[in-house]
Image 1 (cartoon, one colour):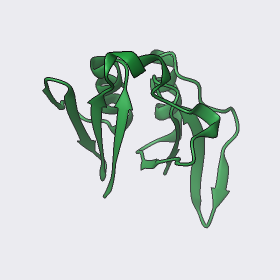
Image 2 (cartoon, one colour):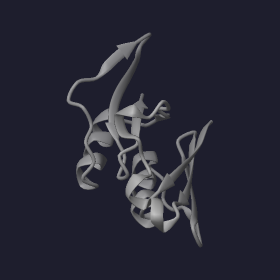
Image 3 (cartoon, one colour):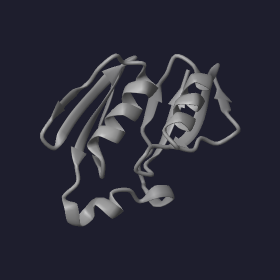
Image 4 (cartoon, rainbow, N blue to C red):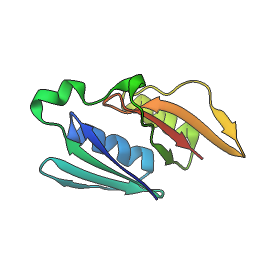
Length: 114
């Protein structure tokens, strides 16, 4: 299982995005925290302190890029569109696995694969 902790500016928006990317039916939500799991992945979302909410992601400069298993690259693209998140148009294939780079609602660079 892939598990990562991410700081986010909008807990509900990010939880909904990851729920849809993972194909989950629900997620755990508490004050300032959410856990979203599915398809062998889990993301632990922490609400960033208010003074840092505009800067929770380093975007392209972030040294970490989590990779999440998904059931379909095309479904992940559609989820991205539905959540106003960008995925690159091209995929990468290596050893029979297809990878797609994109960004989550907070601008964290992520990769999905199947």
